Every structure is written in C-alpha cells, then in structure tokens.
Length: 200
Image (cartoon, rainbow, N blue to C red; front, top):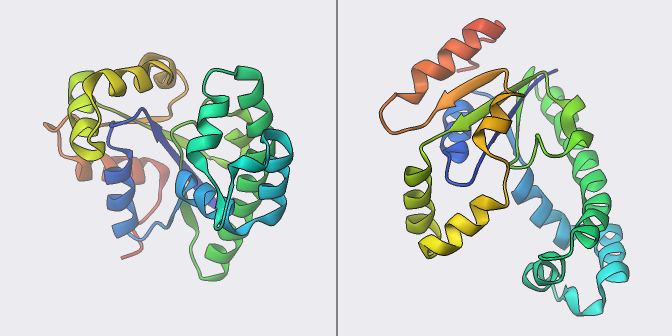
C-alpha cells in the first residue's frame, strides 16, 4: 500500500492539503488527533505515561495534556522518554488503521504529522514525503486567527520546530500554500508523477 507523508510547520496549510487530498479519495491518518484519542483509550499508554510523569497527569478521560506539556516543555530528556512511550503506540495504531483501509479497498493513504521528519522511527512508513510551505508571516497570521494566540506565542512555537529549509532537504514533493498558487493543480501533478489516480 502506497503512503504519502504530509508534513510542514505550524500554520503551513497541512490540514487544508490533507482535506483536499481526502476529497480525492485518499484517506488520511492525522497523527496528532489519533494520539489524543489514544490518550483516552489506550490504557497501557496512559499507565506508562502516569508512571513516568506522575498520577497528576491523569484525568477522568485519560491524560491531562496541559499538565504533561508543562512537565516536558523545558526538559528534553523527559520529552524523549515520553516520545519513546507514545510513538510506538501511534505507529501500531497507524498500522492497524492502514490494514483497515486496505481491507476497504484503498491502495493509497496519507499520514499527516508536523514532526514526521523529526521522528526517524516513522520514516519507513512513507513512500513519498510532501512538505507544505508558506511564508512565515502568513503562517503566523493563520495561527493567530485559528488559535487566538499572540504573535509572540506563535513565533515561539515556530522557533521550536524545524525550519522549512531543513524540511525541504528531505522532501520528495513541495506544496506551496502561499495563498497565491492554487493547491489542486499542485496535488494533481504529484499524483500524476506517482501514477496514483484519484479514487473519486
């Protein structure tokens, strides 16, 4: 089964691209959303995180992400330990989902994650990597509007992510989501180059 990985910085336009590709019949696994679901449903994951970070991260429906984030925000070693617990569970969940999609007759899927390239554990699942880019000021404007954050907060979050320059070195394809170039023709060119026909 063929898999596109879609990645890019905050506010780059990943979600819009994935919705567009999904409308063409390519089902998408949204890693951040699925991880949030696993924090509620995967008891092994929840217990392992509680053992590492303390029982105060627990809530009635799983994990208190705000408390977990505060604990690992400025502690790279602890973040690495959390990722070593979370990422294998997300990977297993993706494999199960991919198997379900295959059983339903799909032969191409999308894996969307902001940190795909930063996480070597996941690289083997993708046949081609699509990096979504947009001008920094446009990205800031989008996130301020979407999340009601201050510009300072948005730029601080962006500073903790990889740069577009670094991502582009590992990209097979690039989507320019700058608000000037239409996305659909760029997507169709990628599908043409990979020999994948829309399933609609």
